[in-house]
Amino acid sequence: MARGTLTDTSVRAIRHGLAAGTSAATRIGVLRRPPSRARAVVDETVPELGLPDDLLASMRDAAAERLRGLCDEGADNAGWERVGVGEAYRNHLETDADARPALAALDDRLAAGESFVLVCVENTETKRCHRTILRAALEGAESCRRSLSARPADEPTALPGRLRTCGDLTRALPD
Image 1 (cartoon, rainbow, N blue to C red):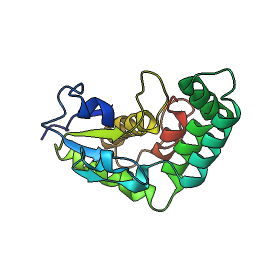
Image 2 (cartoon, one colour):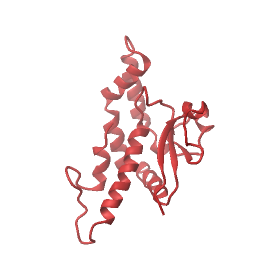
Image 3 (tube, rainbow, N blue to C red):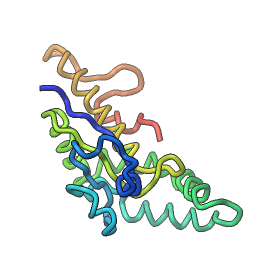
Image 4 (tube, rainbow, N blue to C red):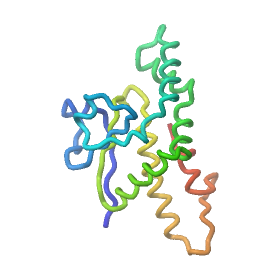
């Protein structure tokens, strides 16, 4: 069976009919505490894959400190950089006892042929969002799965370059 397709979009894009191709796929909200407007447009939520509360609070605090002289998007993105959200979220995906199995479950569903759309509130044309890292992790998981399945059983599971194992994959993904 062919692997399912994976896309991502924002709540707003769905609500305003701007997210093409999302009706045939399962819409999965990846917010820790989804607002009602998000719950209204998704088929299910996986809060374990949302930004951890402490990381989100740190980012918002950093963004609030930088609001002077910056637009909302600029302040938000500056907060993202200052706190190191990308690296912290990749670490969360790799080490959190709830996030790891949730990520693996989504990868298994994709491998079984299910298609889905990752949904969050941020518009990634103007702001950074963890769902782009999550999408890259799921796309990378497929590459890792293919790499490992193509190896002889007695060959080590090391990956080329600086990636030592598939577990290192999330740390190498772009923000």
